[in-house]
Length: 371
Image (cartoon, rainbow, N blue to C red):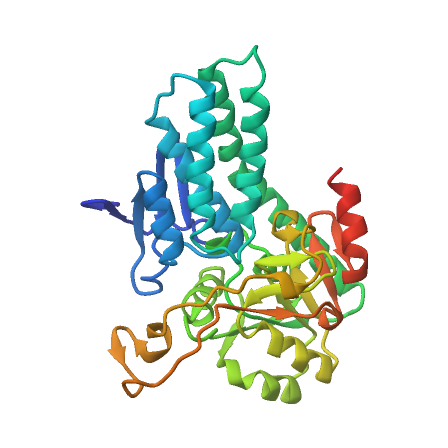
């Protein structure tokens, strides 16, 4: 039974295929699972407007590039549901202001920008259409924003199948797979990107074991991925970030699957800090290295990874654990949230909802499919 506590809803509702991180069952009513409190507490926080959405994204109560885009967009729907506009121009201006603000919460992750571009393009078209009223324009924008959630789940399941089939074509045994950070239901609309591939392999009876890193300094792997693997009864082991070289040396790791916060035209990929070093280790140990990214995470407007702006997080994420200082006062800290993996190290391929491509194929294939 759910227990209401002020603006919070504490619940134990769990989906069969992963934790329900985003609850949106009725227009204007959005709740998100507060990932800062996992795995010890399952607390849902209500999002009442764009300001709440921005704070949830910035504070990392919700994280993962697809989930950021979805929650940001749905927070806009909640906001618009309580607003009235006299003219379409007023609605368009309001929309542009709110979406620009949402994109600023975590700029490295491209999905919020992708959602904003889709909504702003639709808004501009409707604004200039004389046959569409203000109310109809508002309704179409809200419906488009709402569609991102279900579409993301469908896309994730497609990528899970594409990624699983691709690596199984090269293996006739059950597989040991390593992943980094969190790319499951908690980071997406549901099912997951890289963790979706692991779920698919597990459902096919072809996953021998999954390994997840702790993912310092925010511990998304130990707090979140381990939580999801346990919820789905997937055979798994947690390792520290600095154990991955030893893991690849001492055990046969058949593939590494990771998500992406932004993939650019040449295949360079920005993802959670620690991804680059895994790619280097994978190259040395001859382990196929895969990136799993929906087209909304792929930015063909950027040529190389050198153009990606890397978010830097507060030093307290390094100096403190659970609010307790664990480092000497005054020590300098550098805390980038992401790093960029060069395309040449992505040896397995880039898994999208359209198929698995080499980095050199990505630009042409995506341009064709997105026409």
